[in-house]
Image (tube, rainbow, N blue to C red; front, top):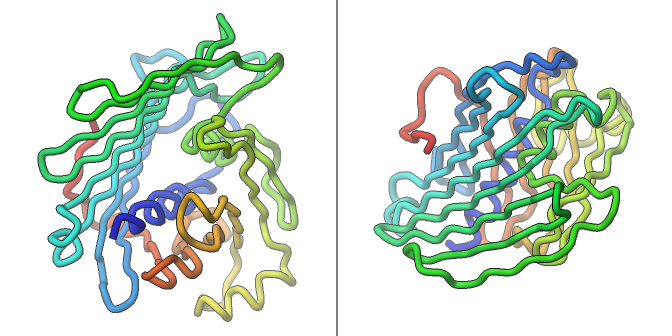
Length: 267
């Protein structure tokens, strides 16, 4: 079951990345809720993604939370993950810059936390990990010249808000991630109209106008093929996302459900 969350997290991140594309600097606050199912388990987990502006300035906070439910929750200790991206808008670069990225894992009363601090003024990136507030590891390294790192949330929000370029069918995007576990680049592809047809049939998606997004993530990290498919309506509302062939679980699907609020609260 430890692999389940390694798959749920990219699923939630991917399903959100094209919602309501915005090209203005006045970025909207949003709250989106998702139901996640696999095999015969319906609503095995729930997720929430928020995006907030801080104190009416150019700083923002993006938060992803996910938690298992029911029987799956019981056998996983009601495991909960929280990802927090601290962002600032850079007018010269016309994009969001990640300055701090936090990952928190909660199992029962046990808490693991890791923090990346990205200091462009001094060209340093720092890692710090703790368990129950006790230091496990702390490292630092130089940031190469002319390099801007994205955490997984900042990368997808920059893509979603159009800061990585126009959103067009058939187009590819490459994002440079924080060099954690040796992973640097993430691949994003928007399917051409011809590519959509077999994928929609395979995933059981009804006909209609929209966008099919393919996100390629290193499979070793999430214990899967590393392939995530997301289907959007023509006005870029994300309807479903599917992770292909996850270890043990097979295909895992997330469905937008903004008719209810998740039992999650952001830090």
